[in-house]
Image (cartoon, rainbow, N blue to C red):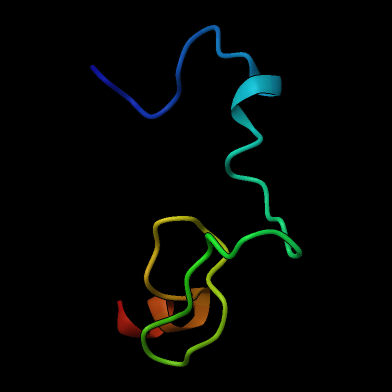
Length: 54
């Protein structure tokens, strides 16, 4: 099965692209409903709106 976790992954190399950089370029989008910041790259909704929407 192709699950979510990679085997023998070097975390020092792969953790840089998902780290939040508040002063860098804005690769984190804003929520489509409440226009607040989204804390996961590639997502369209914040945590609260995702919970409300289902």
